[in-house]
Image (cartoon, rainbow, N blue to C red; front, side, top):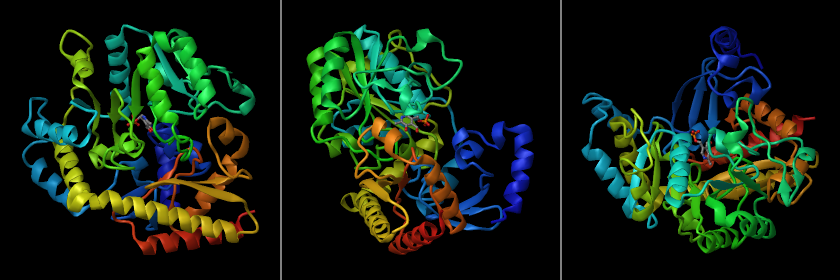
Length: 440
Ligand SMILES: Cc1ncc(COP(=O)(O)O)c(C=O)c1O
């Protein structure tokens, strides 16, 4: 399909931007071809510069639970921008949003605002080390916690022959330019594996500042935790005096009003949020109990930021939360039902395809398609061995030609928002069926 305006922008963009974009996940590294340059969004739709329309299931990597240009957000931004975007001073709205968050999240007594998930995670790791006086960080294969040096390790090592023994994963930084000292205290463990966790905690638990996990593995598609796994992780943290750090950057204000902590009945020591929290504007936070968060007081563990608690973003955060929570959390019910319905439709289409084998994994509003012969993908090693990433990219690019936008990376996932409809689900299922018919 020809996209002359996107092609022209790509040619111009490559001269002045790395790969023509501002993150590898938006450009040729992810698409294997020219990315579509978008011009605007409305509701559940994105529109590109060539005038094409897409049902958007990526929703800015999950930053838009209310979809694009939701009237309450447009109204809020228009009103507040006229009163000043950012002061870097104390603010009334900062106190009010923090009060809302503390009311919503029983494991959070205090919050500290930041701008991105990476920044919040950096602050949380420093806080965990400061609070415990310990150095080690225990993280899991295939989990991503931002692009900070200490944890950009084994987020996506490939091929599987590089992974090493499951009891002792080979540690592999995901980038050049990361000094060994930065990750020498990072321990990597296979996820969703009770034995591996017990072993790692026996070996390192007493030296660990924290064990950090995504509640649902969201940077390897959608991989839910095995029953009792996160609870066991939390118990082992308590036994060994390590903080249990639940990274809710993806899952927060997505899977439930209380995130994975609510969904799986957890009581984490530290959480970080980003993405959906800002409703489309940059907003993130670190949260936890009083005695831990007190570590961030002046003179103890430092965390700064010119743009922390931006007033425009805080006003949008507030209105996003109010809208999602209205009518006894109807927004959260809606995105959950839509996500499940979309996953069910995909499974029906998959069942009818005699040309391709695919499964759909889903937790509430999040879902991902895996081209695989396996019945289930339960961890990163499964993903490496059994998921056809190249085929998924081909599939997603073809889907774009049919007016459906999913991120072309099999390691990411799709998300519903409150503005998706039953009709979008039907149209998406039809487009998927058509692509499966034409795809080699
Ligand atoms: C679980 C998790 N933590 C942290 C981050 C980093 O967030 P940001 O991209 O806002 O820096 C991400 C981003 O995808 C994430 O998925």
